[in-house]
Image 1 (cartoon, rainbow, N blue to C red):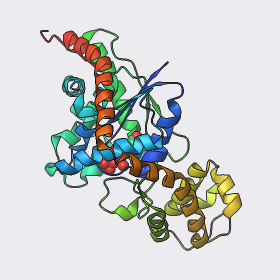
Image 2 (image 1 turned 120 degrees about the horizontal axis):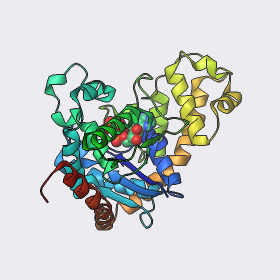
Image 3 (image 1 turned 60 degrees about the horizontal axis):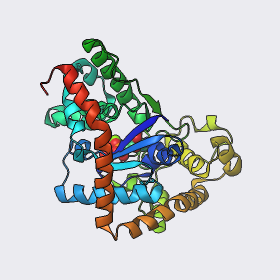
Length: 331
Ligand code: ATP
Ligand code: MG
């Protein structure tokens, strides 16, 4: 059975893009993989996080993942900082990674914009910590949204250089599992920007704890154009906002874009957004309800994460100890 590693930052409430790009895939991959799922709090603090909020968001996120169908009887769910192997391997990888590689990372450029000088060094080396997250478990498959593809290619470069520098075949190559539909869900306010849980505007995203009224309102306010829905996907080519809403509909209703257009062609966005609201609510409402129930017992959630961390540690410790020996650390 292949081992999967994947993470999500407790930097906010998970949004629809996280669900379609990652979480939904995590749930189905549990059937035939050994899965390690991680709330990556060390990644989250690469930008400022209020400490109390970070703690509470970590628990909320655990609840959301359980509510969405992560099975912690059979798989591992924990928070990153609880297993020191991540930080130790990340340091080794910081010394393997070349500055030129990091300079090419588009996520860093997107996140810092023009203000590069005032961002943390942690945000810059984020991809090398991500490589450590995965390779501390020698995981070979990583289910992520399309925005993480470049970071996974870098993880492979790091693994290859480590193996080459030390003349061993120690770390495996990893494969990105990117869902075929809705691999990049876009912001509701700007069809050229990806939907993000840390975007300052909550109107830009649907959160997995939003109730039906909030979802309806956010979709009603979502940016669109004044044209009707076309009969063919080609008619969406130059219409990023329209394409995004149709893609979300298709992914959530398990239909192709062609099928959605066949049903809704000629419709304006007023009625289409109503139909879309129903589809979004039908997927999110049960998750939101179960999250509320699970949040009533924070002690239980914390215990689930603690036990996950122990199981994660048991896998990662021997691998990272071996890597430390390979680089010459006196043990
Ligand atoms: P942040 O804004 O704090 O970076 P985020 O919304 O980008 O938050 P992450 O925790 O960085 O979420 O990513 C978690 C997972 O969700 C990753 O696998 C990522 O590829 C996926 N993901 C994030 N945003 C989207 C999106 N808009 N569409 C599809 N997948 C996404
Ligand atoms: Mg992100």
